[in-house]
Length: 160
Image 1 (tube, rainbow, N blue to C red):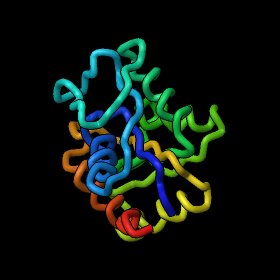
Image 2 (cartoon, rainbow, N blue to C red):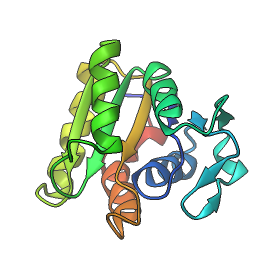
Image 3 (cartoon, rainbow, N blue to C red):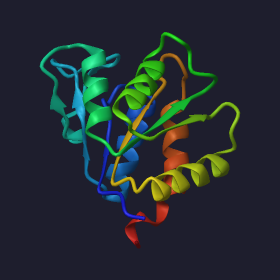
Image 4 (cartoon, one colour):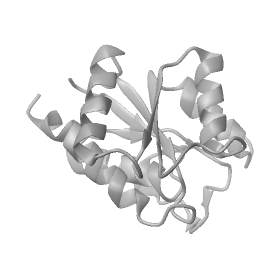
C-alpha cells in the first residue's frame, strides 16, 4: 500500500493531524483551503502546500478536496452531527461517488481504527486520501488522536 498524497483543508484538528502524519512519513501533502488561508487558529501554514479556493467558502474547499481525492476518511469523536462540516463532507462523497469511511475515535480502539483505514485504502485502491473531521475547538486533542491512528495505519509507508 503506497499513498501518493494526503490532502485536506488544513483546518485545526483532524485535517492537520492527517497532514502532519503525511509530512512525518514523507508523503506529499496538498488540497484546497479557503481563500485567505484562514483557519480557526489564524493563517494556515505554508508547509502543507495547499491551493487557495476562489472564495472563503468552507463548502467550496470541502467539495474541491473530495473531488480531488480517491476517497475520504472522516474522523470524529462521537456521531456525525446532521448539519456539521463532517456531514457536508460525507454528502459530497456520496454526490461524487467517492468512497468514504467514518471513524468515531470516541468509540473505536485506535488499532481497530487503523486496521479499518488500512483496509479501506487497499480495497478502494486509494492513492490520494482526503482527511477530514472535527475541529480542535469541537474535539480537543483530536489532531493527536488522528496522528496516532494514521501512524498505525500508514507506518510502513516508508518501507513499502
